[in-house]
Length: 291
Length: 291
Image (cartoon, rainbow over all chains, first blue to last red; front, top):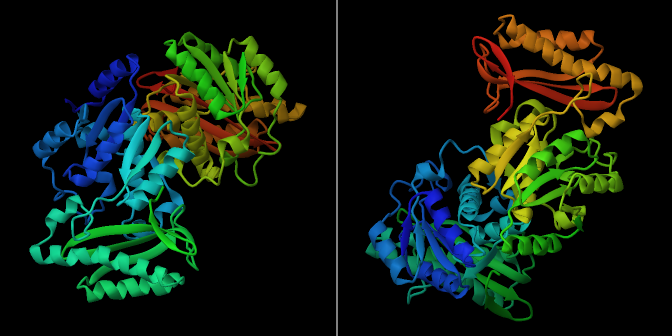
């Protein structure tokens, strides 16, 4: 596996591959890799071509009070994992390589960034969309894979690619879960033993919401309020939001119908976790993918 | 010359060319072509590869009270011109082809868009940056050429390409002028005979500003105020702005030093015209290019 720290060296390597007729499949990450990243890379590998991953903890998507400095950076384990998972190349740029000067040009996702996590993390999705646009222009992949766990991010990236006519297909990878249902996440390693036990309640709360829909409930607020109460009962006191939205464009859905996103964010101890399920709600209720 | 109205047909044509090893050079336009566009195309041709131009009057860069509907669209003359100037292909998309649904994802240029024309045309440069990003993703050129007459646009496009790591070089084309100094512009055709005579005063005003710098004046406000008075004296009563800014980042320059942009906008009759000169101000004063 090749490893690159500069944009120009990575571009030279990829240009040589393209000259031989290879396409490029891409999985951008912030490192601290886990089974969710491996699942993304497995999907990217099936698309063929040069398989590139990036590890970059992107400062512009962290708020001033967030965990940018503390974010885990186990670079050696990460690169060993990418090698084992069959990556051809990893891009490991410094902050200075990615942001030579103060960023003035931003990709903004408008109303898609105003709800859910965007409401609680000002500027987060502007940072995400901008760094992903940068990475796409550097790597020029024909496909890129994102995890459904970060549902709003996936929706925004897909919309960015569509509305800016980027020549890249955005593929979605299902959320990978621990046996008790907790979605795997780089931030799970922050959890104390007690918090880890409570954290499983987040997914259980989403299942509770699904059960309500299955029982015929269609009022969005009745469901999200009931999920909130469920979370409190499960010992999760720091619920930030529980929302049930149209899965295509994050608009309200009430009465609940069609493809919907049931998403929650909660602070467990000092760790902020998010999770979601996507449901196709017609006469019956069926779990499905965001896209 | 090939002509394409859909993104997918243009992409198929360009992909075939790329397979044969061709690069692509690109001149985006809003049509109503004139000698300034020809000069851009001449520069693009020297860069080699498939020479593509686009004609698209972009609605998202016009304000609600601006001349989107009235903007000239002499499509037959324009395509005849492009053929004569040696273009290989022209892209003529409809508004619906470029904006399938309501645009939610925008490229924003921050403080670069807050001054000069950006202060007077809310949302203009957001529309410009976004449509150019779209066109770049559709055409995937290795070089694209923009005219210096739209100096702020050129600075913003260059900064977008740099800061989003777009794999395209932005080249600048000098302003083409009529014998009396008026910068050629698609909007000149709106001018009545009287207004056309007055319009030459805009460039004369900029030359007056240059003369002040040559005489040793270095106070920005003294120069811009004197240019304003000159314009009034020349019968241009609708001056919108006269500004003297750093040509790299459009920040203030006072005392005036280094590479500076002396830019003016004025309404002449009902037609809004802009013009600028770029000066290298050290011990002496030398006219130069924006970049």
